[in-house]
Structures are given as structure tokens and as C-alpha cells.
Length: 114
Image 1 (tube, one colour):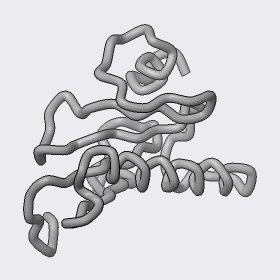
Image 2 (cartoon, helix red, strand yellow; image 1 turned 60 degrees about the vertical axis):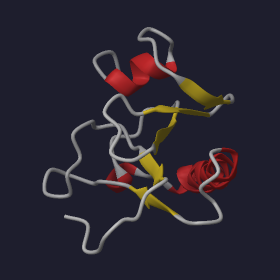
Image 3 (cartoon, helix red, strand yellow; image 1 turned 90 degrees about the vertical axis):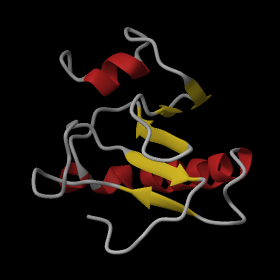
Image 4 (tube, helix red, strand yellow; image 1 turned 120 degrees about the vertical axis):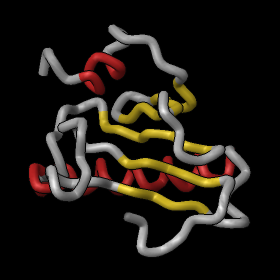
């Protein structure tokens, strides 16, 4: 998808502060962090939202959560706790239409979130 900002980041057309990358997944620091640790984890494959997942994407999503677990440990938030957020659709707060997961930590979060 040519106009997707996350596809451009994944393709290195836009610079970002990358903290993890493999052949299927890239993770980078959020440019507008809402917590001391705020990492976005995305598949390199363009998938619009959770609603657009296919059966073939099941293992990809599992891999994303393995990476989130690794990053939480690497960032030092695994012991005290962290939050993983996925926004889906307009009312869910999704502003970039490329599935992504926010790994947030380093502060106390409240509930409900918003």
C-alpha cells in the first residue's frame, strides 16, 4: 500500500527509531509516546486492522506477541507490568489503518483506559 505510513516505515522510506526487526515484523518507538516505554509493533505485511486478518495471519499475530514479550523484557517492564493495546476502527481509536500493537510501560495505568 503506497500511502500507508507504517508500510513506508517498514520499507525504510521514512526514518524511525527501530528497536526490533526481522523478515516479518518491525518494532519502533512511538513518535508521540504516552508512557516512558511506548513501542509500536507491526507486521511488514499490510493488514488494515484486526477485522482484516485471514486464517493465514494466525501465526504472524502469534509471532508479534512473542516479540512483544521479548521487547517488554528488553525494555525492563516485564516484571512490574505493561499494557498491549490494539485499536480497531474509528470508534476504537484506530488512526493508522495498518494493524499495530502498542507496547506501553514504565508507569501505572488506570482502568477503564479511555
